[in-house]
Length: 112
Image (cartoon, rainbow, N blue to C red):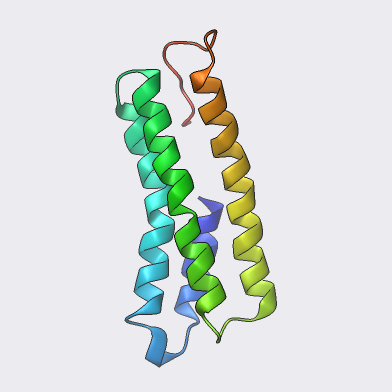
């Protein structure tokens, strides 16, 4: 959620010529990460949850790439987006690994 909140702050500061293309795209791509996590949480079984976590992991590449492509962002803003993405990636990877181990609980309550 921190990634989404930060992306919204940055997207709102983009110049007018980026407001309707890149700003919308980077917001949508960031939103897809927690949305897929939430959808996976509502699915039945560890395999389905792991599948949606994997989709979220792939979705992280979008806001990263869009931030790098946006020449009007400051280096510190790009770095912050990349750092938040890395943090989320590590968490998702750990959750996926946990779900794929034999001894993990059958129902996972990752969202609070």
